[in-house]
Image (cartoon, rainbow, N blue to C red; front, top):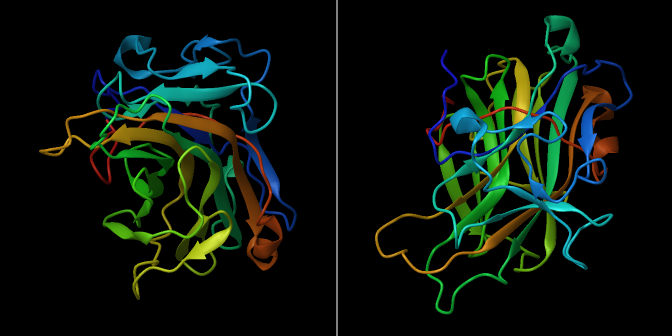
Length: 274
């Protein structure tokens, strides 16, 4: 399937290469965007690439004092300046069936810390900004699910086919780091979403997971372009990211762990990336 992305896409993906089916957590990739990353466009650094022939500088490594979740650096995207959805990803390692978690026994969990930061938002902002995580199968052509936090305090989840805008989430505020997590339980054929390690409970049956082989998880940023949402924007920040695998019997032991990221790309069309 073609993976050509639109010119407005820039993206961060977390690839799950080298996952293990053991009873202990296995981390596939990890970064906090510290050195050897340097400030400036994320694309082109440490294997990170973007769409549109590698051209979009929309996602930047930055080091404004006091803003990083850990260390001194983070990735940022200003929706007040650049329109549309943005992705960027680290060039993935070759993946084979042996690299992936055993689908009969494992949970794959991806997490990222996000900060919907309001410093660049214009007065009277009406646009809604989103920051979160998208996950795809090994081919990169099928979305498995996502979780996105919105600047209005809602969370949007997706089970691979249907999006749902939930009620406001407890504990969210602008200018604050929050952890979003999505996991795929291959033993129970379930998908789960967490906000700051608290399980989000969807409507009955919504958490059914079809068990498609896990491939990667992308950091995602966007802003609303709906009619009437034409003013202002927010700065989105991403910090520590992780992709992990664990035997199903040890699933709960991973809640609360921080980490990493990896790499690939997405389209804004649910269920596909081009």
